[in-house]
Image 1 (cartoon, rainbow, N blue to C red):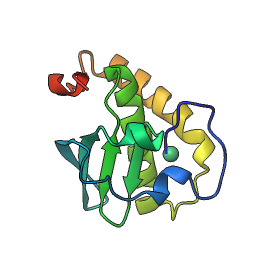
Image 2 (cartoon, rainbow, N blue to C red):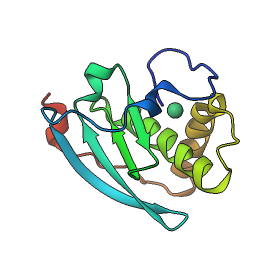
Image 3 (cartoon, rainbow, N blue to C red):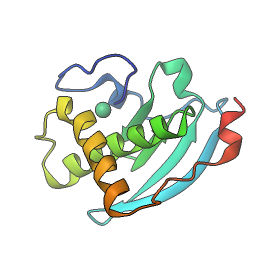
Length: 129
Ligand SMILES: [Zn+2]
């Protein structure tokens, strides 16, 4: 879950309760990342706006949804949702949710320094919402 406001440390993040977007929302396939042998599909989903979420993950569907907005913010959200996947696959969901945003920022900072030029190129059309 990634919400615009400060993160809370609930046991079950509210973002994880909504598993699918409604069919009226444009969903743009973005890519696939394999973590722990599971291929996680990543989509940009305008429907998350109505749900008040920046991102969402469904472990059942191996689906990560990202709300279209500023590309750097989307990248932070994507890494946050990937941390959800890592936590679920490797940590039996034992990692506290409150650390995900800090880890996401630190990982992105490290990646930018160690892999200069590494940037996620989000599709241009997502900004025309
Ligand atoms: Zn989260």
